[in-house]
Image (cartoon, rainbow, N blue to C red):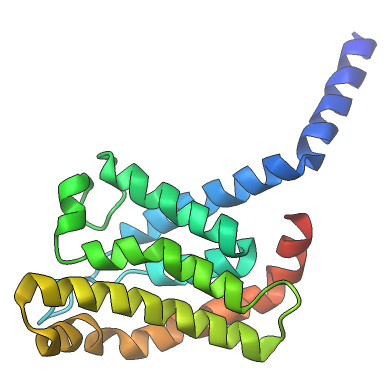
Length: 191
């Protein structure tokens, strides 16, 4: 029994030391976190887009996982929802991506990639803030563009799809910055 236990312990340590495994875990954690934060959706009067904490998860994915893995976590999230899992704010399914929030959701992978690309491992605080802010801007661009296509009115899309979220998303960037500063060096070291 002792030999089996020793072999099991060695295998477990080797398993955890695997860089690939750590990357898969990181991608999975952010896929799940984005899904969970979507479920806390607060309707905002005058817009078909609810308030969620998804944006914070998306930009954190880019900051903590880097561009490639951050984007992978969000691709996994969008694909999971498109396949019908109820991971979006009000359900799931491919048709959901054609609704008013589809542009935001489809922008998530590019937003995570943008954060990681602007603020790589060696980036200082200014680049990190710039990356987080750029990630939010990418989400706004995707969301407002899709709302403009749906409504035929860019002004209304910006008013309903960006305006109500500006202050809230500044707070999300600040939250993501605080979390990133605390755990980013260790997270990037592991990946």
